[in-house]
Each structure stands twice: as C-alpha cells, then as structure tokens.
Length: 222
Length: 176
Image (cartoon, rainbow over all chains, first blue to last red; front, top):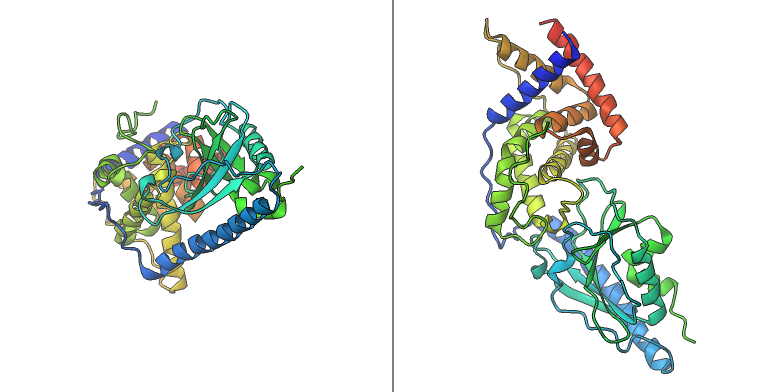
C-alpha cells in the first residue's frame, strides 16, 4: 500500500465520518446568561478587581493633576463612551498605523462584559486619563507593534478589554483602539488596522495593564 | 485543492457583532465536522456535550474571532479540541475515565466499510496529541499550518504527528 493510498483512505474516512454524523441542533438566545454560579463568580471577580484597581489609579491621577496645575496633564483627555465602539472587532489589517498623527491627549477606558460577544453589551467600568508623555509613549508602542499575530486559535481572549480614545493637537479624534489581552499577545485594533503586542514584553505588558503602567512609571511633569 | 469553506462569512458579519440567528447560521455548516472531531476525542456518548459547550463558548467569545488569524472552521475546531481536553480532565478528576465506544463488527465482503473501521480503530488508539492532529487535519480539512495554529503546535510537530499516525494506519491497512 502506497502513501497515496493511505491518504486517499483517510480522506474517504473523513468524508464518510462527517456525512455519517448527525449534527447537533444548537440555538443560542440573545439573552443567554445562564452561566452556572461558580463560573459567573469566576468571571465577575477579576472584573471587579480590575475595576477597583483602575478606580484607585484614576483617583491617584486626579490627585496628581490637582497638585500639579502647571503640568501638561490629561485634563483635556477625551471622555470614555459608556458603551464601547463597535470598531473594536478586528476585521483584518491594512498594515497602517494606529496613530497616523501625533497624539495630544488620550484616555484608557476599561469595559467588562458577561454577555455574548457583542460589544454593545459591554459596560464601562473605569476610565483613566493619560498625560501627554504616557499617551505619546503608548501611541509609539502601538504604532511599532507587529502586524501579524501568533496566538493559537483556541486562545479565547479575556472578556474584559480596554479602549483607547485619543485626539490630536487640533482636537480631532482618532479611531478608538481596542486592546484585548490574549494568551501570548494583546490585540490592538481600530477595526481596519490591527497590531499584536506580545504580553511578555515588559514595555508592552504595560499596555495590557494600564493601571500597573501608571503606578510603575508615573508620568513626569516638567 | 481544498474546497471553499462553507459559511466562511462572505456577506455575514464574521468577527463583528452578530445576532443569535446570525451565529446559528454561521456555525451550522460546521456542526457535523465538530461532532465528528469530538466523537474521536471523547467518544460518541459525550461528543454532543462537548460540541454544545464549544459552540456556547464560541458564541460568548464571538468578538474574539479574528478572521485574519484563521477560518471560522479552524477556530471552532480549535475550541472543540480545547473543550474536549477539558472534558477529559474533568472525567479524570472525577475518576470516570471512559473507554471509547466499541466498534461494530465488520460486515463480511464490505471492504470499504472494513477499511473505515480499521482507520477508526487506529485513530482511537493513537496517543492523544497524534489523535488531535489527525482528526483536526482530516475532519476539519485544514492545512498543516492551520492545524498547527488551531492546536498551538509548530508546523513541524504537526508534520511529525501526521507521519507517525499515517505509518500506523498504513501498517493496519496492509494487515487488512
């Protein structure tokens, strides 16, 4: 028996296996929230923990801004929308830049969802205005990140995600950038351009956890 | 040459917000493939549960499906394999390790049927990783690269597993 015969036999077996298999009937409901209690707790606790951390950081930043009125801070940072923009769903990439112009102001918005994968059902749990140096650094990291991803397909990203809203010197808004942490990398996308940031890169890990970034590398005011 | 994947998303909001009806329509063409894969990994008795779990999970995480990284079928197959692994671990923890369902007797004179049963038996006897590779590669009709991505392996490992599995299949088929 040749290798080709084995290959043919396997293809025949595969075709027959599929046609002989009765597909299960499966229907999802829009309001499919019937998570078992332990699982629900498992999802809720990280979301609450993240919310608490981010709120503490936001309070710290606000205090910093009040005590340093001369600083170029995030007082004019864009506001986080109550619901995330739908453009956070990656639809491919055009290889371009996420920030094609210099960034003047930016805010990080953290969203949580327990609902099916429709972005409209996520809720804002925290918003963190970023000062100019951090916003610029973040924009640079994102613009120079890889254009192809390496996460395995079965890596399901966290339900919680962050959205960066930013504007340039003239107050023109950039397309919102959604950051979704995965297994090996964070996907950053505005819907047309997608960049992949490795989670084990210390600099980029900062993007995954903005709160930690701000705590570890406080913005410098000159 | 691989056939175009049915329901791959042309005109359908793949990766975008979907309604429950959209989702059902998108996954329906792949349900039989997923069942066939799950049956080879956890047995026919538990396959439906694993597929239900996989589809429910993919629905909840639909927003993380990135068509740039692979086809819908590959994504669903990857999640099904992941759910099958978890299912086996759950059974092992509960000390409920099951053996795969016995195969029916081979009808005399039906050589095609006999060949399929031999393949089925060999596939079920393969080591776990080899079995995952062979069922995803053949049943989901993926390329080596797609299979590697779906299972989180290097393409070289997939090729090695495929070669080892084919060698066992060849021996078994020659003995038929």
